[in-house]
Image (cartoon, rainbow, N blue to C red; front, side, top):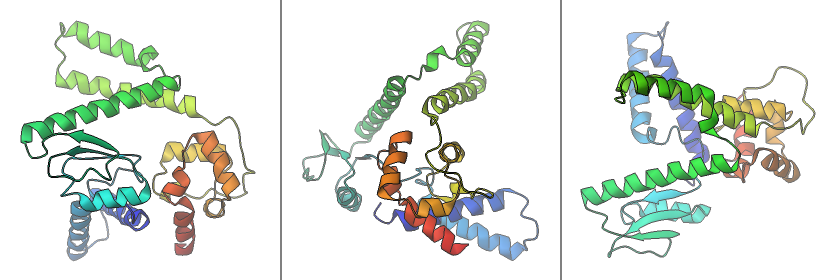
Length: 259
C-alpha cells in the first residue's frame, strides 16, 4: 500500500505481458516466449490478486490481524480505515471497525466474507441511488430478465443468467456514466493528439473520456496540476482525493520521463 507507485508499474508490466502472450505473439522465438511466460507467472503470483484494484483502497477488511500485521500498519500510515475480525489474541488498537469473533474457524470465515461482500454490494447500490441512478428503471435490463423467467417457468439456467448479466452491467454503467458526465471543460484543451491517459494507474477508458471532456488530454497537464486545479477536478468528478492518493502527478512525470 505504501509502495503503490512502484507496484502500479509492475501491474502495468503484467498487463502488457498478458496482452503479448494472449495474442499470437508473432516474431518471438520459443526461448523468448518461455522467458516472458515465466516473468508473467511470477508477477501473477505476486500481484494477481490486486491487478484490478485500480488504486489505493478506501477501506480494507482483515480476517487475521496477527498474520496481516504489516498490511494494518501500512493502512494506518496512509489513513485507510480498517474493518477486521478481532479474536481474543488480537490487538484492536489500530482497527477502525473491530468485529469481535473467531478468526480461525473455516465456517466463521466464510460467514464473515459473505456478510462483508453483501455489505459492500449494498453500499454501492445505495451510493448509486443517492446519485440518482435507477438501475431498475432501465428497460434494457428489465425486459430480458422477465422474458427468461417466463420461458423457463421460473427456473433460470446458468446460460440464461450469463446472457442477461452483461446487459445488466452495461445498462448500469451507461446510467452511471450519464449521471457523472462533467458539465463542461474546466481547462483549455491543448492542441495536438491527446496522450494515452490510461497509462496512469486507475484511469480507464471511461475516466479518460471524462478527463477529455474537462479539457485534460496531455500527461504534462496532469504532471503540472496545482492544488487549486486538483480541487476543481475533485469537485467535478467527485474524486475525494483520488489524484493525490494514487499519485497521478508522480505517475505522469515518470511516464513523461520514459517517453
